[in-house]
Length: 137
Image (cartoon, rainbow, N blue to C red):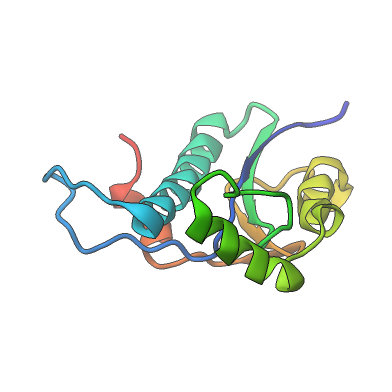
């Protein structure tokens, strides 16, 4: 019987949050907000894997790098210009999807859960992303 798998898509490795105290309301903007959401994705994946342990459902996350998909093209002229400049160093959508497809189909990771991947290799995320104390209760 094949394993069911849950995958979280990430866009930036490591993911750091500012040193703000978690009990205080904080408003992040721009790239800071983006990084906080990616940190939350890693923490969610770790917690999801913990809660799904023993169910046969795997939960992992990965970083596809910058992918030339048109992402962020609707956020104003400056962002559109920035994405145009970055396009030559961006991965193709096919290359960006390789780790996702591998995670969903490879028997090599069929029983692996709660792990962060980059280019089909297990990697450690930032120290903050490894901190289960700031995760979910």
